[in-house]
Amino acid sequence: MIEPLNDLLRNVSVPFSQAHAMPPSVYTSAAFNAAEVSDIFARDWVCLGRASALPNPGDYMTYELAGQPIFVMRDRDGSLKAQSNVCLHRMSTLLEGSGNKRSITCPYHGWTYNLDGTLRGAPAMTHNECFDKAQYRLPQLKCENWLGWIMVSLNPDAPPVSEQLGEVEGLIADYGMADYVESFRETHIWDTNWKILAENFMESYHLPVCHAGTIGGLSRLDDMICPAGRRAFNYHTILKDDRLKIALAHPNNMRMTGERRRTTFLLAIYPSLLITLTPGYFWYLSLHPHGPGQVRIIFGGGLSPDFAIAPEAQEHFAELKVLLDEVNVEDRGCTERVFRGVSAGAAKAGHLSHLERPNFDFAQYIAEKLGGFERRFDPVPMAAE
Image 1 (spheres, rainbow, N blue to C red):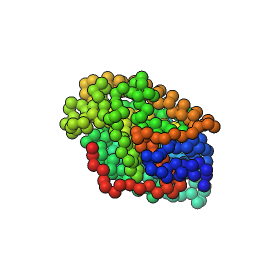
Image 2 (cartoon, helix red, strand yellow):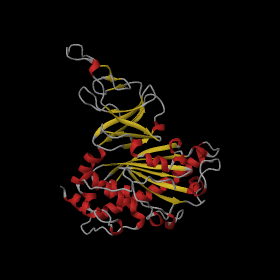
Image 3 (cartoon, rainbow, N blue to C red):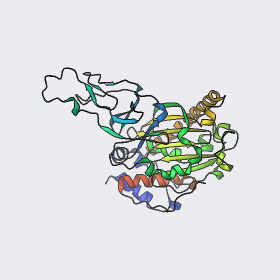
Image 4 (cartoon, helix red, strand yellow):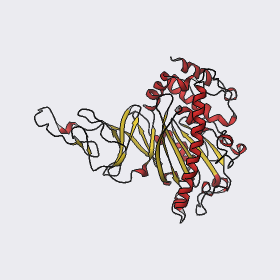
């Protein structure tokens, strides 16, 4: 067993009231990072963004998941399919970036595939008596549309997303997240460990300081609720005031009542889908390790249907994007400083605040996946708050 894993197991084997932050070694170790890729990202569900980004047959986006080039494409029957992005001839990658294709043609020798991955044509193969076009189809991966999110897994035995996240659906049913309208999707690489950025999202303890120039004053630490996490996710909630109107339920929203109309959910779907969901807008990060010291990020967001169809929708979209870009600059600075800190020889993890309960649950999830740590949960189903 690698030493950073021993460090982590010691760290999570105490009650939360005695918990420390994760030890520096779990962020900096190349061996630990490799174990995360093979035992978590190659086994769990990973989010590639919103299904609405692929509205038409032939629309696609590419991704590298646990070292495997893949793409997700809207088939002619309207379904989403995740497939290997490697040609079955001489193994060139097929597609780059995102776009729309009527068919998939290898840029090396011109082998062409239908949208469902079956081989349509292969030039100059008639003299190979063993070649049978019908025997070729790009490997198919598990792919689901869960509440508007494209979820993909390399693991053929991964249980259905809804089976793992049914509790999330109950918690946020009145938000109608599946119908939120994405207005932007970007990719970035930051110089920090993926877990540092995930943990940064999971706690709002840092808001008044790290985000003093933007959203730090829009919520109070005393209003934050951080319940114990669940098997496939953790969350916390914040009550927003009326200084940011698009964070509140639109006047036309009749589904939500009372404090729910100003409650923000911060959902961390393991391993790396991070969603800020307000009654008026959402934004998200989907993370993947790029070695111990970098993280690849999908960053997107948009508005609830009520705000998206309002006469001032474009103004709202623009306002939201400016705000989120400013928040991202602040988060990047904070998380890259943390990675520089954990890389220092003198780094030592301190005790956690009660507002960092989600971080402790996340550490236990990592310990379970990599080291067999046994997590325990209250069997009583959660009710919507």
